Image (cartoon, rainbow, N blue to C red; front, side):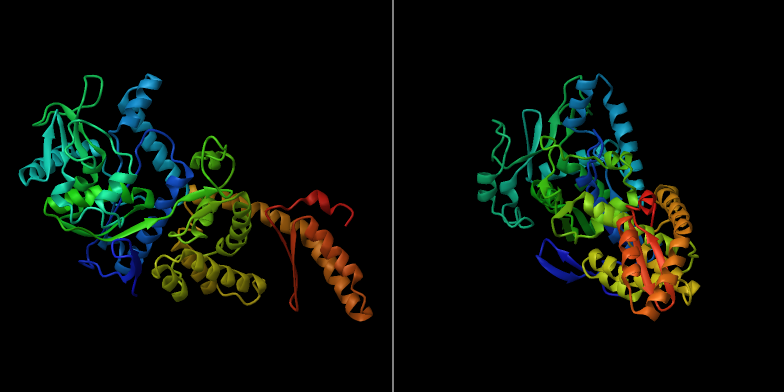
Length: 473
């Protein structure tokens, strides 16, 4: 199976050829743990979780290493601690736990390694010392800065911008100790009330960018296969990672993947607009994690995604139907070749969902009359490549409740199905279908999908099913 990925570094869709098929390595930038993850933060998690599952499927779970870090030393965490009166450690610990719980609720597998920046201070200091020795960094007033001019020929290639353009368009920190406005901090001094570690440049703490370079090198080696994240990280974070790592003599990442941003109901997510949601907000409002995941997968990762209530309702309805199939699935199903091919084509999850829709319709249209156990198993296995129809507590609890509700609704609708069969038989003889059409309309108004075929009549309650509207039908 050939995997094709769009490499940001070359701006081309390329065949993915790992350095070592028995040791496929991927690094994805993780969260700064100072608050709940908003739904935009969930997009790269879901995107690269699908890629992680695909790599497992193609190369084997024992041959894939996935690293996603936690930034647990940062000015945002310090500010939150000052506002709340709580310790920095407590805030980082609590928000890290929240993040893991919320990402599990949307079906994300845990990466192989989830390093915390504070556990890699020694590795960061060592890399900074090396860069100073090689003339790529300098000390100034207790800070250590990377000298962009020392690697001007390579800086900006990922984002496709020249250094001069970046200086003109960027919000750069103006500081007297900088030789160049684009030079970025790798180490900065700490006061007594802030986290700090002893270093050759005094007590201080790392800048943001150095942590990923140090952790990727320690956990994945000199060169690795894939580096991913949201496209908002392309500049300056990823440009700075590349500069540090390359100048330190490391090969670093070979394929760069970036997901596009998210909107809510057609607008940029903003607290001022009242359309800002965390993942936990949606979960607490009763939106299942599997529904959140389905909506995200409905748009290709390199296109802007719009979260809407309508999409969530449609996803809920579709997943209830799929759960009615997969509820009796057994382990060992075979993933459809078409699903593997679509996901392998630059993570075409939207195409894969459409393929599953057609397969689901086909199975449901036969009303279990000639559906084999193997077909059910294959359907469920194919959905699981996307992280859907899982049976663990986080992903399965709502759907099992939903399936129970659906089964109860189907039992309630059975007499109506029998009446519709009788009305259709009469209509076939009299050629007058008015009564059939009237009943179909009433059922539809009550949120019931009417499926009529030669085999019989099936009534399927949708997410908006309202039994009270059936009174008098």
